[in-house]
Amino acid sequence: MNDSLQAKSALVVFSGGQDSTTCLYWAINNFNAVRTLTFDYGQRHRIELECAKQIAELARVPNEVLSIGTFAELGGNALTGNQEVEVQKEKSNRENLPNTFVPGRNLILLSFAAARAWQLEIENIVTGVCQTDYSGYPDCRKNTIEALQLALNLGMERQFVLHTPLMWLDKAQTVMMAKDLGALEALSFSHTCYNGIFPPCGSCQACHLRNKGFCEAGVIDPLIERAKKVT
Amino acid sequence: MNDSLQAKSALVVFSGGQDSTTCLYWAINNFNAVRTLTFDYGQRHRIELECAKQIAELARVPNEVLSIGTFAELGGNALTGNQEVEVQKEKSNRENLPNTFVPGRNLILLSFAAARAWQLEIENIVTGVCQTDYSGYPDCRKNTIEALQLALNLGMERQFVLHTPLMWLDKAQTVMMAKDLGALEALSFSHTCYNGIFPPCGSCQACHLRNKGFCEAGVIDPLIERAKKVT
Figure 1 (tube, each protein chain N blue to C red):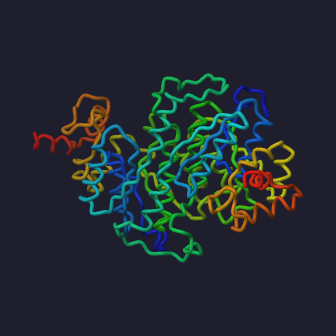
Figure 2: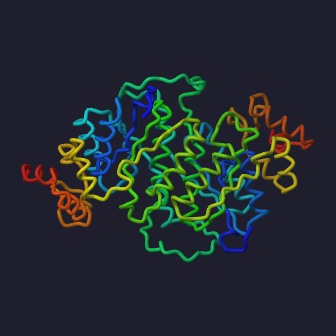
Figure 3: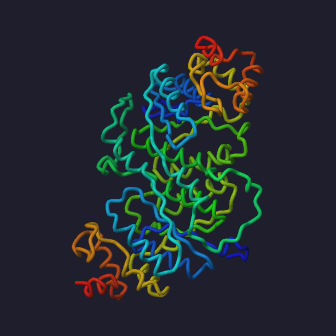
């Protein structure tokens, strides 16, 4: 980390989930001034935006919400596009993806984050993407992030650094990192459940994976503890 | 150009202006199936969207409009952001840019175009960016476009080619290319004037530059001819 003033500030791409909450605390531990940017892009559960707000308040960092309606529109287009054109289909192993899947979503979110960082004169951008656990989204991988960093730096004439502290961690290691960073209280407000409810359902795939990570790390999930108090 | 089916299709990023109209005709001359994608991102003059539609009809290619409200929101944020954070300002030669200026706009537009192209299984994307005449926007330059192409290909697992037929041309050369491609009639519907009017004002900087390009190419601007008939 160099000592220039910009190097002391960071913008965290912040969904209010477990990974970006851990990244927020990583940033707080590494930079003097941190702010968060949350995207409202029509995600299924509005509870995520509320979680992001609560966690940012707890961490005492600004939380800004930027709306991107275009992903929803792109999702719709795939279903309702009425302008036909002679385009041959190539064989693809991705044809079973939901029609709301938008390829390159992370590329676009990070580009908007960089645009906002440019305005704020912040050069450090922190994102929770993870190659170990990238779930088939190639824009979470290290090589994509490096290429994007180059494109952003050439295209905006800045020296952005895209920090990816979780890139090579598995879920248990991310939990350990969160514990070491003092992020467990904040994680009690983070959202994971696919069913978009609090207390979490505990049985969906997202709850299952979160639970597995905490178990393997030997850490009690503070979200579950908070849920017990509420119910 | 290879002979695979995808290579015969192209998506043109299409504003309805002089450059992208020329690119559209370049694409029509180089691909079997062409469609256009126009972004509605709160540009000052709605007439541009209408021009895009008219020109696409004339060229008999589909024209799809995708809305991106985020640029307007980013423009506003720079003015109205009420969440302060301790960010030191670096010296910048860009402080006189309008607050609606969004850095990296082309990066984001091209990423959305690639997302749409991914859905359509088109790998050729055509854009009218130009390094010769890039007006201080670094994301129009060749090196930025090349880096972005790499990021898009890694992040979406495709082999997109970002075609930039105007990259090294000046305005007069672009006019000559349009003439050679049979695009002059279409250019009579293209919009340029900063004042957003038809007939064009003829005195703003945009009208002046357009006129200069046609004069140097020794070609009569078909837009002016059409305006004469209307008035």
